[in-house]
Length: 162
Image: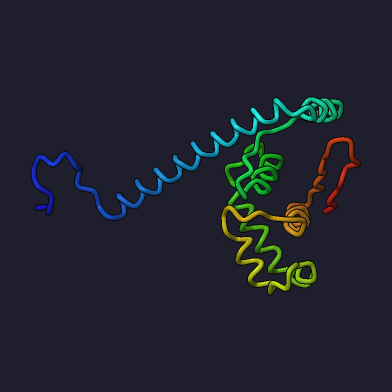
């Protein structure tokens, strides 16, 4: 017999099931918030005079803008989107990239800024929502054997070569 009273309307869930349900609700809430941020950004971009110019610049190259929420996971979402056609595996890409950086510490440690120890930098970079920088771009490109091309309005292309 459970400790709940009869007729309470609650199903008898295990602690694990309750935790799973809470995690699912948290994920759903995060998706809703990301969607709201994206809609806000779309509205902002529609009002931005440069939006049309940038869209045209990309269009001439056969490219299109993709909506990626700027939530600190955006670099890995964008890279995953280009690699796989979707951004769902952004956390896996983050972990794989940081593991590559650890395995190739000699290539990345000299570029860590602000006198932060390399291990601390990697620990922070492993956390979801932490904005990543050029070092992660280089690591991702090398890990996956791809070139990463960065487009900016009316500027030369930046290329990270594998």
